[in-house]
Image 1: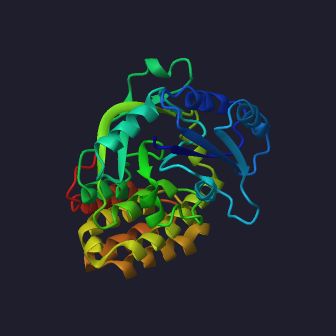
Image 2: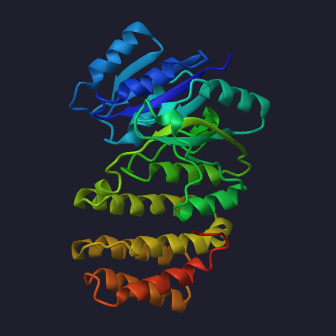
Image 3: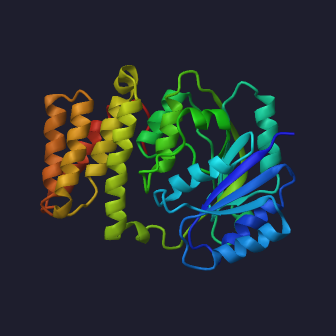
Length: 333
């Protein structure tokens, strides 16, 4: 009977972690372990987890070693080092699994023995007692690995971290999560996997997990700290990816990679961010072939961003975005 290792990084979740752990404990498929790695929580979440572990030894609680980088990537990697399962499911500490989630995922991967992973559909919820009533869900993207990679690059993520069930071999092959990333670790991991020659996977349009929506979700990404974290992570992610992409992949994915840069440079950054924005721009220009027109548009965007958005620049930004968007051979809403 195949064992699933559910790996969950945890940081200050004492008020909601029970809902996540209850959904794991209610699984109809019983051969699982849930490895929870505390990322330095300052609340009593450890006491809550300890109570679950006391009653059910399948819950295993660890603290991230101080020698490891803070963040979800290091926690997931450390969790995998403790894991005994044949498959990995990366469950965020605020998400919820349907009771038959593991049962259906294991059956799907048994039915498709040549697939490296399977991906299911995800629903949304605000509160635990209403999530089953919420009809909204994210359908799986149907496309080959190149088309899927393009979706990730233009921020139309085909799946979130909880949705796949991976054979451990494919995760080991790409070296796990990038511990230098404090954000964007999910798409970076997915894009690395999609670059593995011969990787195959199956998408199944069945809701089997639920993503918790934060009422203040949009606001929390507007803080200075969040912007800085995103800047750092965007640079680190593409430094990694440009080392993974083959020459052919760069050529095939180039229009979507360039559009990603344009969308990123369209964010309202501050003058203090000039050095990093310039470094990011140089990384892309040195890694891909840009036409004279493309370079001009990129430099215009960078200049606009560092002048606190002078009046009349919105139309220019939109024109530049559409120029690069039209070169992507996928539909972008």
